[in-house]
Length: 220
Ligand code: ATP
Image 1 (cartoon, rainbow, N blue to C red):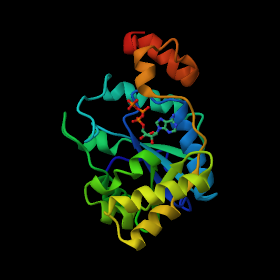
Image 2: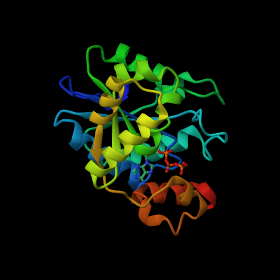
Image 3: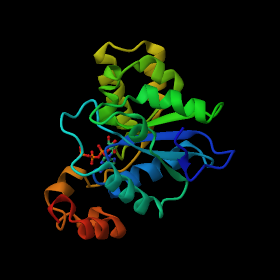
Image 4: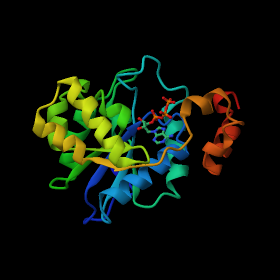
């Protein structure tokens, strides 16, 4: 099994799974990770898990897996209580989708007995019922949901939207709501960086920006 890099200390809990394309990783990812760690527990530890290809995105990543991993390593060097887990990249045949439920089950095997949480954004929470084996996922790794600045207002708005979906039981709705935490919005997105690296420079860790320049990624 692919190891966590670095291995978290034995008392780290919960382990928070944070999946994404990270094409490239940016300040918004670092920011949401810090807020999730602060909201979860002083012993919490967060795993950046680059996806082979999102089941919800038709196009694959713009750069190689190796490049995304290299950029994540550079950014995570400055990110306390975080590890890189390459499991989805290593286990997924080229061009195929990886599913979060499989990743969660594999982490349970790798770190038995540790509580797990899934980090998602409020927008993802609204489509969470369509994820593969969503109810099981909710049991095994209840989501931490990043809500905008005013967590109370957003939590209420999210609760109404989730209820309107008619996809969750009252108990499941409660669990989803419990996972909301406040996370101020940061103006950063991989799409915008790919469109214009130099203008989006402030969204990038300096070492990641240097790597992009050095390797001529995203037309830089
Ligand atoms: P793309 O623009 O290619 O769709 P992205 O910038 O949204 O990518 P992903 O790698 O898909 O980046 O991000 C993984 C997760 O990171 C997202 O689903 C979202 O929850 C979170 N995220 C992305 N951008 C931000 C941001 N600016 N602030 C907080 N969280 C973010």
